[in-house]
Length: 256
Image 1: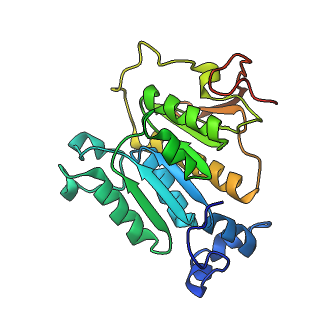
Image 2 (image 1 turned 90 degrees about the vertical axis):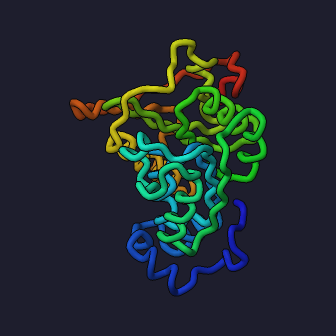
Image 3 (image 1 turned 90 degrees about the horizontal axis):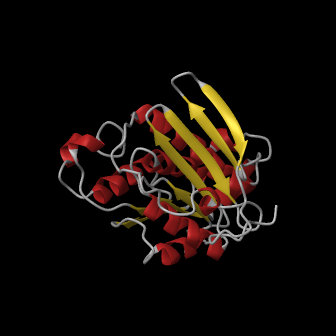
């Protein structure tokens, strides 16, 4: 993992007090907390989904968060982007994102990238992280992130939602397939505009954050190669094994 602090081998008294309750979990303790402190996580898009992932990981003490999201705040963002405020309308989103997370946890390192992930920057960003979180709405970004994660051997937590439906899965290079195994290219009918409830985004985000914590600490069992689908209108949940295509351009089908 990438050291986030010069004192990454220890926890300060303030950090021990902050993370005390999660360190009580069996198998976590100081050793597990140090794994979080020494980790770097890249999150693509810090909106309704990624913003809550970032918030939960910052609260949990992940030592370094790399946050990628461009553009200025619009009124329509405020029903779900909980790191933003009404007073920040018309200003760069990243300014508010960094300020709010710094206010939450001054013990972690934050790197703000005021642009969206693309084929041009994905390799550099992914190469700096231990785990990648995809919370982007556009498949161009999602596939670029996927390709870089598979190429560089980084696990990727995939979070998505639409209306009352949400899903989370985790791709592990060499163990599972990848996003391109079931979405090989940008769907021609996909549109940026779709219904969004902030609470649905937050539900998927919290599950995604748990997946990251499990990957970094070794606790629990990640959704490796399985899609957790949620229909929150009826509170129905199901797990589906995802395909692994041997001819996949992103991962070559994994080795599961």
